[in-house]
Image (cartoon, rainbow, N blue to C red; front, side):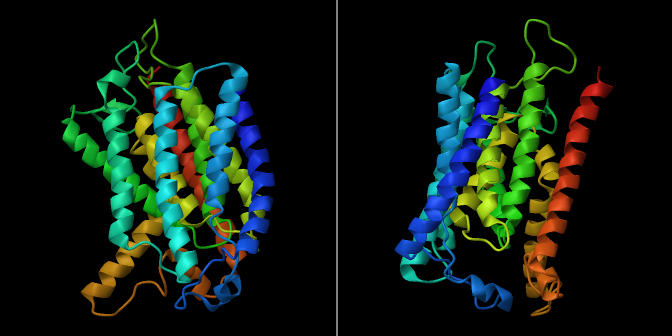
Length: 355
């Protein structure tokens, strides 16, 4: 438990101080954000704001996690290694995307196919390792399960090939969902703080109710839940520190480096904690943002040019209606808080009902 507090606290301090240094260095190097010309005109004033702040979030998380493990003298678990690999790997894909935008001075970085290939390589390798029997613990539990999970495993045992495809789908969908949400100052960062905070609580609870020597009807068969909580607390702290500088008016953006990394980490927590379907509730805001884009594009093609929203993702629609950016962000944070509260309520209620 001490490692959770150390990870979260150290990550917050490193991110808070490191982001200030990053702002100064990225400004000096000219690493400024390019803005879409077809977006809200109010965003044009943000052109040139430093981007790639996700580098700080990733470094703060990794440094804080390993510092916490070093201080407590506990060896990192297989689950934590896998989650950090997924986190850093997709962050690297986002970094390449951001760097191309900066070097080419355009609002588009990696081509969509190249980005998908990068995400696929990381997601598939993560999935293969997560279900690898050689990474099972003494009870035979692998980091990921071969079953579909809501609050715990249920249903049929799926073939490994199907599991890998599902893991790829969850990782790519969630990382792109957070990427779509990252369009207003502090929106994705603040929402991520709440969802990762929720996963910290979920993993702590799973550790306290883990299936050990005494197996109860509602115990959790999750490999390394306490270590997952340390990673979740570290990411939460890193996002919290970054939010100080990313809140409106933003002094720095996380870029694809941060949004892809955070999205994949959320997917990783859902997979490794056996709560894949619960993520739909906890990350409800990210789901709505993604659906708004899908509906907009689908309706536009089906009706040959007509639109459901004034602009997608949906947070831009409310801006186009005249809402202030801060108003949109705060209300979307409230929606995220309600989603997180609902998800945690469902998670706890299921355990209470079975005991």
